[in-house]
Length: 128
Image (tube, rainbow, N blue to C red):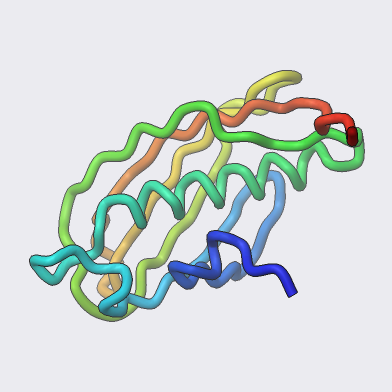
C-alpha cells in the first residue's frame, strides 16, 4: 500500500467539500521543531493539503487535478500539545485557479496559524 506525504505528519481528514475542508493533526514529537513546538512546515503542509483536496473535489468530475502554486503562511501562536484543528474555505473558485483561506487552531480554539493558498487547476499529465 502506498503511503502519501500527509500520512507522515498525521493528517486526519474530517470532511471535504468544494466549500470547506476540515482536518486535524495530532501534535507529537515527530512534528515538533527542537524548541518543542509544531514546526512551521507542518502548518504549510496542512494548508496545501486541505486547499488541494477541496479544489480537487470541485474539479475532479471535469477530469482535472489540483496543484499548489502559492502558500503564504503566518504563524501567530505556537502549539506544543493536543491537536491542530484546521479549516479551509475558498475565496475564489475559478477555471484555472482557486484561492483558499486556511485557519489552524489549538484545542482551545485559539488562532495559531493562517494561510492563503493558491491552487492551479490543470489536466492530469499524460501517461508515457
